[in-house]
Length: 419
Image 1 (cartoon, rainbow, N blue to C red):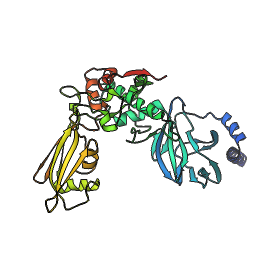
Image 2: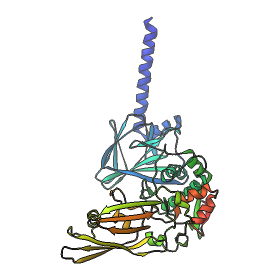
Image 3: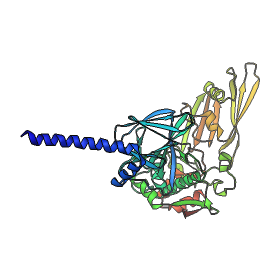
């Protein structure tokens, strides 16, 4: 009776020893890694139009916890199959390259790549899942974590985080128009020949949620516009977008200094405005005079805390109706006046919302000062340049195609397929 149990025990010991032996062989040499690669079929994400997204910076020493099986690459060679629960300890050495320690094994390289071990897998970073793979690369005194991912997969993590998806198919054409804008923006950034990464993960470029943020309709919008970008004069167009324009889009030259782009001069958004149904089409902010002066002090426009607010008025507006010059008059205890001018889009970052949680929604506003209260009554949300998202949504609901929507907000442009 004991003999079969003995055989089972010996078999388990043999299997365990054999697995450990293979792992050690794999970690010790390139020749065994090639043998290992032949035995196993590992998933390598498509390299078709890859975009590099900077997910974050870590200190010069950090630990990466493996949450799904991955393949570790060094100098484009697979060096280890790493299972859940393992910890990858990265550190920058004196020469500016990267050290990696896994258990008692050490590696050294200019960068490492972490790739999912199967097609169904994703890679984790700070609790979020991402398609493609991660590049771990030193940069002076920090370590950059970069997600290298096929462009179309990247867009599926951008579109639903940057724009409302709605219910049913009502927003589909607007989402298609936006997908083309987001793709064009990405192509322009990828064309900069950045050595480390192409785009940030946040509002410095486009908000990218990663895997798990996709929605069926926005995925469909990306798929049905696969490879399409907006062009002008046979080149990718410069594209911008915002939530709602308040009735007229803004000239890109006034906000971003963009020249030679007549398709970004600004357009009237219908009458009534297409975006009039937007949540922030109309808004109001109120400040007492002391709070208003504190905003000026925080912006470095005055350092005297003893000033009182005497007057605030709009001195000029641009063609879209947005405030171009805001004049603020302060008075000292001796009734000496100090006049401050704030121009264009800077007004938003100086004045901010009344609760100081964000920049002012837009510069399309009227302002009044009564007693000790400043009241700003405005329209629209965002810088106002390019595609008005809520305007596009309204046009989509009205049955307009994505091409019609793009022609409306970017007159003179064409939709073309990437070559």
